[in-house]
Image (tube, rainbow, N blue to C red; front, top):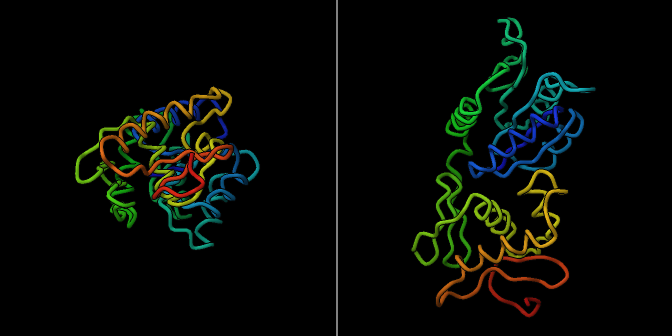
Length: 228
């Protein structure tokens, strides 16, 4: 599941991203309203977590703009405003739920999952490549009908690769999708995680599906002449 977090407080954003990634979500972050509006317009998300008080274009304006463009992604509004009038304003603008700060992460997670259950995206189609399957709704992965146990990070990497079936996915793109702070990712960290993932997905007599494309990144799909 892919989440867009629009939050200008870097410290708060970092903590939320860490928690969501540990729960298996792929998280993109925007630090202001304009950036968040742009990302929501060009990428598909399962849910948007949107802070009300943003510099420049605030959360209400972002929410209104997204709904005006018929973007129906569920929106969870975060704000310190707790009056009835404020809640009505947020919901009437197009937000699907409203969470008042400060809040416990467990409640945020419960609200996100509730939105996903109500959304048409809550039961997405199972993703398949050859005999590899990934069910975004349950986060279950199997190869040849046999369940494959993955860490949260390995699952997030696999979801990016399988959604880009046949395409070359650069290390930079994986960092952007799976890690929040790119500066914290060591040069070989992506390679290590992909190596662990490959051992689990391609072990045994299975036809290899995860391939290294030298100088470019990784590709998921049947082998071809460009693979290392």
